[in-house]
Image (cartoon, rainbow, N blue to C red; front, side, top):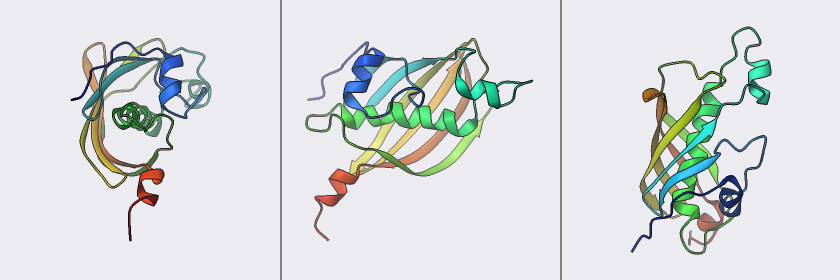
Length: 154
């Protein structure tokens, strides 16, 4: 049975996964059902490093960092399962990425992710992000957990 976890702070998120500031793009997890879904958000403070360089006169969050945020959140669906806390996770594929609106400073990037399947160290996921209730991106992607792949016979 999958026990639902709610309200994980940034400190608690760091207990499950290895990303840290300034490359941690989740501030809070609002809902987590291990093996199924993870929802959360990232506050887009105007002082974040990427806003200073992308682009100074028109700051916005780069698309691949938006996808990275979804990857980090979705990885928690597996990392929250027994025996997986703190394991290494890699993104190995993205598909059907769409970017509908700019993600700008001063907003909250709300994210919803779903684990579609997980087998032999490979997870297939999908996710979407929203600002003020409007969808700003979506993607399907594949993540891998190298520790789980090593255990599999050839």
